[in-house]
Length: 148
Image 1: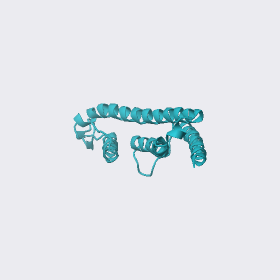
Image 2: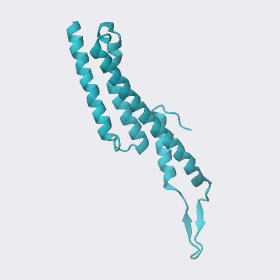
Image 3: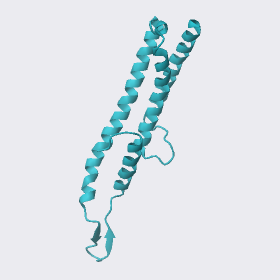
Image 4: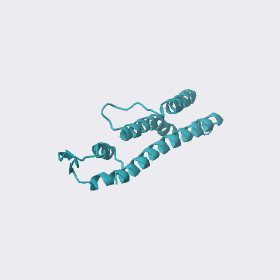
């Protein structure tokens, strides 16, 4: 049975390398689910990759015989490296989104209806980015992420 665990753990190491290649290749423009706002979609993508590598590692941690071999130490280092990169990716997107909220606050202070100086017609003065931020906030709250 131990030999089977070793083979499965080796295959897990190959899967880790695959996830790392996917991350490196798709990091600039990750595939997102339909109708997901950009920031929430990117965070969701990184969480799915993290879940893909976390679930098997939780199972392997309970088997001490596998975790002590020389090859397993390499796989564990790869796991830590990939997991750290995915968590940093999520954190960077979240912090950038929080900064964009501060920039959009000025749009909330503007008057909603304005009169054109020459023609005298009324126009709606509404920043569309506010709607995008509201969608992002709703989506991020559903994912359990703190929204300022």
